[in-house]
Image: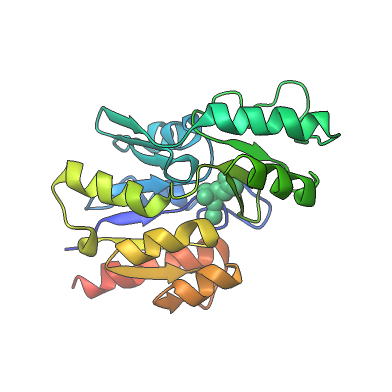
Length: 225
Ligand SMILES: O=C(O)COP(=O)(O)O
Ligand SMILES: [Mg+2]
């Protein structure tokens, strides 16, 4: 039986130019075990992805800040402290870098994300002041409550699904996947992953981005026969 999957989005299901690889729509809808989408992106993004894939809403969003599985919803982390820190950041001349509409944070429930163009040093000093941490995923800086992680999110999802985390295969590309690699039974970093993810994964794929992920999915299915 193919194993349940915990899949990161950016860098893992995407192309080098940040698009969802179209082959995701061939591979995931018919996966014969639960698929959990685990991302740093805000809550609506993975929900929309599940919706358009036609798979159940099993989602870890905001680096573990939001967990939604089959209509059960829980939150970890504290957006209001992050907002207070961002007020300070902006008072000191910082800019999140998303423009007026800020669709990156508009629906974010438990943390605040800044563009990689934002002043990292200032963001980190403000984070220290407010007891928060900054996680650089290679796609954004996340200003978040320390200890809120995808790994705990995966534990919560598996409890809900009555599965053991060790049954899961996790695939990811960055520091925000490391905790999930520690919880899943088997972990893969795609070749484009950052140093922390490369070091933490059981296996590093030869190929990058979704080519790497696809190689894992194909080998898991092949192992089945
Ligand atoms: O939102 C980010 O910064 C990265 O998102 P990811 O966890 O899906 O790679
Ligand atoms: Mg990623």
